[in-house]
Length: 300
Image 1 (cartoon, helix red, strand yellow):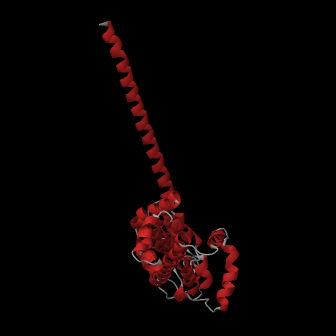
Image 2 (cartoon, one colour):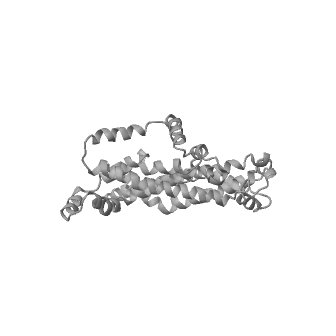
Image 3 (spheres, helix red, strand yellow):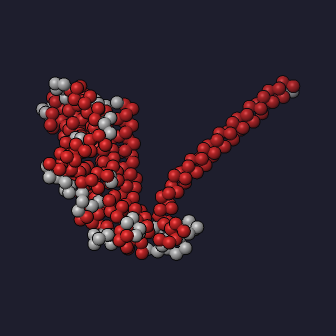
C-alpha cells in the first residue's frame, strides 16, 4: 500500500504541472492575440477615421467631438466625383489606370527579360553590368530627377504620359530586375537542359519555360508596380500640367484649395474610393506576393 501511494503521488504532481503549463501557454497566446488586435486597431484608426469623415459635413469633420457622423451624408461622394474645374474624378481614375497598366506591362516584360539575361545567360561583362544595376538601387530619386527632367524636356515629352510609361519598357526599376534574378536562379537547370535538347532556343526557353515558372515573381512585380505608380504624386505632378491628364494622386490635392476653399469631405470621400483598387489587388494576389518575395529572398 505504501508503495502504491508513493507511485501515485508523483503522477498527480506531474499532471498538475502539465495542466499549469497548458494554462500558461493558453494565457500567453491570449495575451499575444490581444496585443496584436490592439496594434491592428491602432494602425487602422486613421483609415477608419477617414472613412467616417467622408460621410460628415465639413464643419463636423474637425469641430465635432463624435467619431461617427451624426447624420450620414453621401453628398461628399457625389460632389467629389464631379471633380474640379469641370473634370470629373472618373477622368482621374481613367488616367491613373492607363499609366498603371502601361507601367505594369513595361516592367513585367523588360525587367523579366533583363533578369533572364542576368540569371541564365552568359555574356561579356555580365557581372559588371549586374553590379552597375545594383548601384542604381542606391541612388536617391532626387539625384536623377533634374537630369531626367532636362532630358524629357529636350525630347518634348513634358505634359505627356511618355516620361511615366516609356522608361518602364527599358528595365529602369532595378529592384524588380534583382527580385526576378533571385527567383529565376532557383529554377533547376535540368529543366533548361531538357528544353534545350528539345530544340528550344533562348527566346522560346524564356517565353515557354522561365516565364510560366516565374509567375509568383511576375505577380509580385505587378503588385508593387501598381501600388507605387498609383500612389506616385511627385512624378505625375512634375510631368503633367494639363488638368485633363491629371491622375488620382494629383486630383486629390486639388480638393484642398479648389475655388479658394478646402473641400475636406469630398477629399476624404475620393481618398476612400482611391484605396479600393489597392485593397482589391492586395487581397486577391497576396498569396503570390508572399511566395514571390520569400522564394526570391530565401532560396536565392
